[in-house]
Length: 125
Image (cartoon, rainbow, N blue to C red):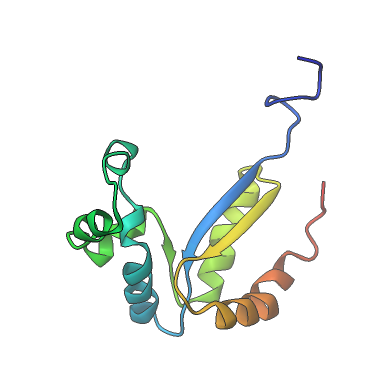
């Protein structure tokens, strides 16, 4: 494979960030649980689930606190900024933010107004 193709050193690192932002911690957690509880299982489980009903059945056993390992849940904008700063410090070049709850308009407005400006001064490599 010619140099510059495929993976390896010098390639940009992208990270998809699963998050749930809402006006309160409780609602951010509840809405993440409603929408994302079926998406936290290991691959060995995911490959065995064949229908939406099976995903729903498996998801009913997931407790809201179990999403903490998979989704960044917070109503605190400064907490979200801190998490994203840590990602950048690890060397990620691009962060793809995915708000897993259905409050998309609020997410776009608040993150556009308060979170993204915190990163305007970071040089783009």
